[in-house]
Image (tube, rainbow, N blue to C red; front, side, top):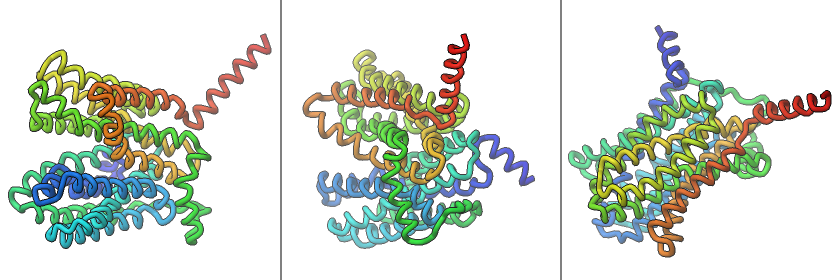
Amino acid sequence: MVAKDASLLDRIGIPAHLVWGYVGVLIFMMGDGLELGWLSPYLVDNGLSVREAALLTTAYGVTIAISAWFSGVLVEAIGPRKAMLIGWLMYVVGTIGFVGFAIPELNYGLMIPTYALRGFGYPLFAYSFLVWIAYRTPQHQLGKAVGWFWFVFTGGLSVLGAYYSSWALAHLGHINTLWSALVWVTLGAFLAIGVNRDQIEKNAHANTEASSKLKELIKGITIVKTEPKVGIAGIVRVINQAAQYAFPLFLPIYLTKFGIETTVWLNIWGTIFISNIAFNLIFGFVGDKFGWRNTIMWFGGVGCGIFTLMLFYAPQVFGGNLTVISIIGILWGACLAGYVPLSALVPSLVQTDKGAAMSILNLGAGLCVFVGPALVALFFDWVGNTGIIWILAGIYFIGAFMTKFLTLPNEKKESGKVLADKMGSSVSS
């Protein structure tokens, strides 16, 4: 019976030996994401300025980027269980300080460090598990496996967290809802770290000395020099979600000109990410069949570029037609998932130091939070809505072009062999 269940999981793309890790990440991310849609307005209603709330979120984003960057090399240095446990611990300590001491007194000086400490939690927990997947999944199954990872990650963060908080706020209140996050993240950590019994074998050359661990951390920086393609992949990863963090700053305001109110836009936005999590799975399968690089380039880069433009120009053509705009939004969310195979492609670009390579990819995931809003802040006053939308579409097309250079080592050897065969046949003729 167990073998049959395991076989079924493997057939749908989930490594059976890691299934409890996936369940744990889903539940952990639900707890982590439950305040994303309402915390800033709540703090502003209780006395913070919009600028102070934005600065608080920025500090949170800084630690997310740092934690995402070092998650991979920490797995190399201390193993995935310990890295994930540290992530859980930082989240718990940060939450106790933020919810227990900072918010009740509206102590802004304490809010910044405690919420920032909380920000170290989820990238270290979730992205360390992503590295675990990269190490323990056969290459032919890896695209599907990372597709399932992004399904549970986004499903917990952007879908279950939002639905749970909509219920919890009405029944528990704001502060108790924040406290309840500790229940969910602890349950998720127990399942992913305790119930999940899979092991990563240490490399023969692994060394547990502090100097060796420091070298692993440094690799999270230097690998872009020794493996330039990893650096390119990191830039593509930043491009992946740049518009996701830029759109909310200007697109809802733009759409009000066509009769689409902000509450309606929020429903469209939610629908976009239901589409996104579904296609996280689909593009995991597509990537394994169509090719990881081709999927990222055509569906991710070119697709997102086209539908970014269509999201902007459709209201000018069709007015406030919600059906048309929703369909375009769904297609944009689907193409956003076209970047899923990056998580399979990047560790496959290198023979060793896969954790360091994944750290660069995870850094890109963290930097998305800054790049999208930064583009709006820097250029909006100069170029307006139209200019920003073309900048966002343009970087998607640039990212698609950059993806052409993300060739796997065996692809390079194969192309070299083909070239040598052609040259040989030319000489013989």
